[in-house]
Picture 1 (tube, rainbow, N blue to C red):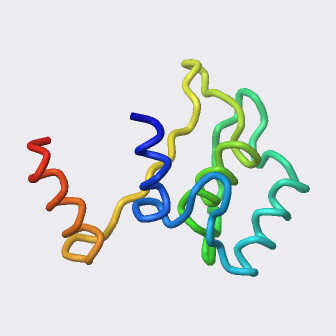
Picture 2: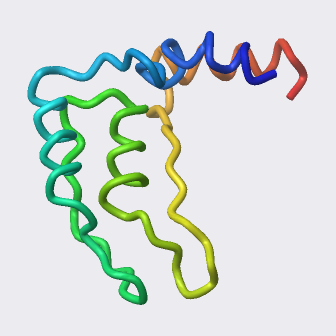
Length: 104
């Protein structure tokens, strides 16, 4: 359920919605993106490279979806954001273990 997901957000996404753990540099990038606004305009969806270094996964996704690419494409679909972990990393193994435990 949603409450369980929020409780696990820190472990799975590197932060939670209330208290993400970005570095000072990451927070500066997030604030600059909020001030600068969208990097696209309605009808134009060519997205430039975006530097999320130093940001928690939650902050990075929020920065991109809320402030940099807030518009839907021509099909009415908004940008999606999720985190993935490199094959064989500790987090990848933990997720795989959890999925196997829960028969997902």
